[in-house]
Length: 189
Figure 1 (cartoon, helix red, strand yellow):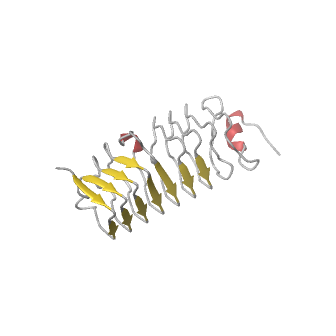
Figure 2 (spheres, one colour):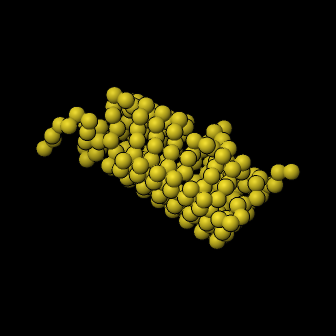
């Protein structure tokens, strides 16, 4: 029997020893919760929010994230490609996503605001029409990534090879354009 939880607030819960009950969580809020290295596989989250939670290293095999927002969460080393991709829709604000992976995911119109995306793998993912506002991409990997119509105008430390990625109509600023020219080893004064 699948458990259903609606309109619940889970505050200061520690799921590191015992993961949340498998089931469907709709319109729920998780505030100041610890999930690090726990297993939340096979759980469905619909219209949920996670605030100031630690989800580092969490296992998300076939976990469904539908209209889920993460605020000020620590999310190190998460393999998002293991999620249930049906209706996958997430947004991130003030999150640490270092060492995570979005390999081959379709993440169109995803918003990242003030996020650390250091050493994140974006290989073969589709982020068409996504916004990356004030994000740090130090050592992030872009390879055969679709970035059409993305907004990188306020982000920094990225290196994107325009010949190896799709960037049609993507938005950059004069301050960060060097990230597109790095491979040519040219000098710009």
